[in-house]
Length: 220
Ligand code: BG6
Ligand code: MG
Image (cartoon, rainbow, N blue to C red; front, top):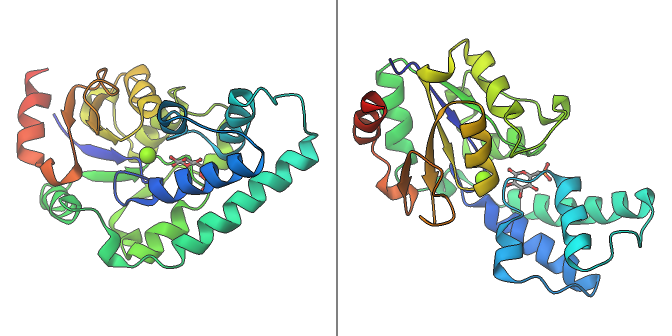
């Protein structure tokens, strides 16, 4: 029986994923690295340092910089990202999400955030929906990033539920893999082919309807 929902944040509740990708793309250009669309997309859901390391790898520069230099690049990218976050308002909640949260509340479902972002509390506050959630996984406590199941397992623990009692939402391939590795039901938001491991896929959040998703969940 469904008892809780677990949400990724960037690209699921709001379109901040686009701010991350723009900020990374700009940094990559400064480092003379050109990222193609697939490489850029593969950064979704990946932690700050893992993203930077991946970009350097794509550019064949994995051994070029010291840890201190890498920290500086990551901090620069974060400053640019936070500048964008500061402009966010409740209007930036993606279509379909307010209804989904309302339907979940009406059913007394537990709701937890499983975002790799250290900026998640800041973003939730800007959106004015911090109080809707029963908890947030602190990404600083994680040993492994997505696609490892750790973050979704932790979120499930915060909710106090079993794997077969939750539905988890993701826009990233690495995120869907993380959910499935945790043994949970995955809703993928985005490209059908890219997110094919998910149990239920919609092209955008506007298509999310809790009753419809629950029907598929109950049949599994
Ligand atoms: C994830 C994003 O939610 O958080 C990634 O999808 C991002 O793109 C990661 O790199 C870490 O975010 P932050 O805000 O801690 O740099
Ligand atoms: Mg995401």
